[in-house]
Image 1 (cartoon, rainbow, N blue to C red):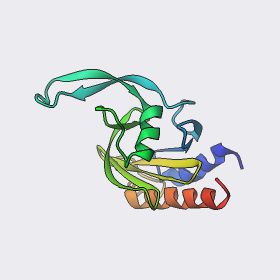
Image 2 (image 1 turned 60 degrees about the vertical axis):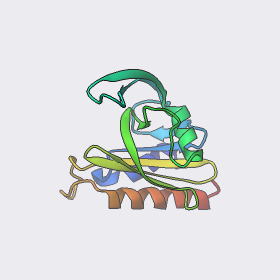
Image 3 (image 1 turned 45 degrees about the horizontal axis):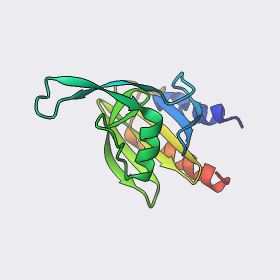
Length: 156
């Protein structure tokens, strides 16, 4: 099975918004993001003292993702956690079970990883799956964790 097929499996039936298989080194193996690498860009960051004012900071998604996996979900950047140019807030990071739950505006994401690969998927409560129900955290978490377990059991 190609790596793209794993992404297709994760997003089947419109259950998830975005999905990716990402090496723990931050290299994308497959995704439906429309990009081949986690990008670098200027991110808007609200001023801590005056939230109505924001500044732009350099942001490297690849470096921040790798840093977060090895530092309890902390990106090491004041722009926070961003994947596919979407801002996420870390809800729960469990290094022992290798799971990371994230929240974003009207949705969220899950990351689960093994020794060599991470599985990422996001959901949006504003998008309905093929069954008519909104995308949700439960489906996202189950699909991501099951896929990561399968890949780990397969030697990844």
